[in-house]
Length: 117
Image 1 (cartoon, helix red, strand yellow):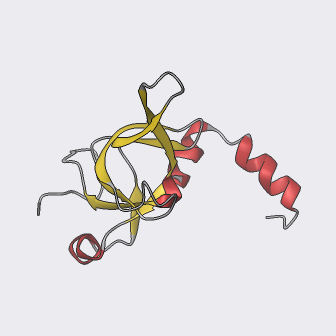
Image 2 (cartoon, one colour):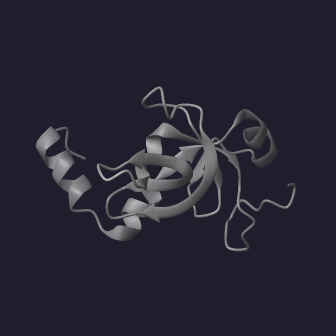
């Protein structure tokens, strides 16, 4: 692994979709960490997340993940919107590093199952 910043950025931006998906890990809440015995997990559609970092108007908002955009490395959350110039509301893309999972979506394919919920 190189320490050169330029090479690191190039690898990040030209990474394949599958490796980008594996990089999109979000920390779990303290309660989920104790239940699942994991500190972070890949975010999926249907998970309930809370915004822990960002602007003061969105910090603390909680909602379900409506879409995970792997190519742009962004997550869309229900209830987190931005006003457009024409007055319409649009979903605000958030970085996965600014989120924390509070409830997992029930999914058979997830390795850490959410049967305890």
